[in-house]
Amino acid sequence: MNTWLTVDTDDLRHLPRHQGHPTRSIEPFEGDMSRMSPRFKTGWAGFHRWMATHDYAVTVFVITDLFDDPDFEHLLKTSLEAYGQRLTVGCHGHTHRSWSAWGEAQEGFRDMLERSTGLLHQHAEKHVRPWFRAPAGYVASWMASALVDHGFSVDSSVNPSWLVRRKTNGEGWGPVKTAMTSAGLVERSWNTSFTLPVNGPALFRFPLSIIARRAWRRLPPPLNSDGLLNVANGSVPLVTAYAHVLDFAREDGEWTPPL
Image (cartoon, rainbow, N blue to C red; front, top):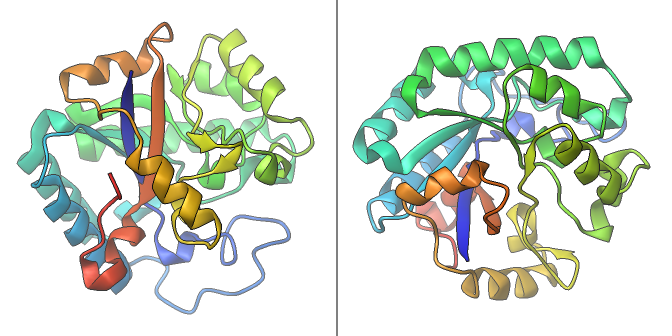
């Protein structure tokens, strides 16, 4: 078995306390909504340096309103040119709307997918893959048909931990996974340990961080560029792990995943 390494591109303005959630988004973002934050730039620089230290393949799930800042396109293209087939790009929405938290919204979700995928193909071209991850992991069964209709083959939104079951808006992870696979999608759920989250924020929230870092150190070997073909092959088991670009800004830009 191998590990599919992924990185999400949430900037500070995308955090649920600022954006996208009906009850959690209560703190207005005071920065420029159309520009990358300095912390994001530091994180991207750290991510770019980390890519030079290994030969793993990594999928970057891009929030496409980042392209409102022309400098983001430059950063992305610089990394894509430097690391070639090792870097692929998936869809993380156009903004960081927590879709399932609002209830079913087929038309809005479909419009977003069309806009976001168009921008990805415009700016990332041959590196784009039809792989989706719901912002903040807020996912529901009703999203499956729209993903298939827009050409997606893989969903990687399910964080199958009881701690975050609320993100399914009452459905539970089982029905969501069933809906995705029944629609023809390959569901690449996130890795957990003892049914606890081990990705993203869990790496830094004590005491989850103890379990999370141990789980990362025990991950199977990461995929290389040739192995990325298996992401969309549902008969090949993979472990899915993710961090954020903002994580790479930690420790003065020197943080790296605990592999």
